[in-house]
Length: 242
Image (cartoon, rainbow, N blue to C red; front, top):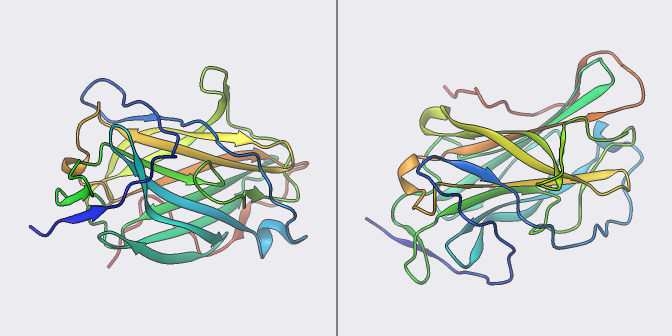
């Protein structure tokens, strides 16, 4: 089998692998202060962008799997990955009850395995964690902005130090492998970002057939509006391709 080696970087803040054989999600420490200067007045409706990345880890180091890249909210883009490409899509939906939901997905276009057994770090070590994030510690400082943003609606967890949004890990053919938390930080400047890392008790992730992940963050807006999609071109977890 052809092997692909990933160069490591050592400055990445990582979470400890969770004990046990099952998949688990955990946050990692935020490592920068939000430094974004401004956003367009149109916000999520037309021109909003956010920095996003997928990261991978072994016991002591990490590397970028895909990205970081600047993603246009409401669109779909394809970026390079070690096994081909990764498709990033997003959608903002007005729920009609004073909240909106931002959904971002990171998916191998044919629902293939993101972490085949031949994918290792450059020291030969296996990938034991994978992280999905936007506006987070390993991306640049472009966080998510909605001009109507009035706070995160998902519950806050004091132990994690973050709001607990929803995250779905996808497996072969887009099947659901794991449903857990996406850890969101409100930067208190009208923007937010989030991250989750997935581990399997410190063991290699290659055997799970991971094909992607989907995060959904719900936040408050000042008043209910008509239910509908504000930004087109998104993707849902249950998508199937012809």
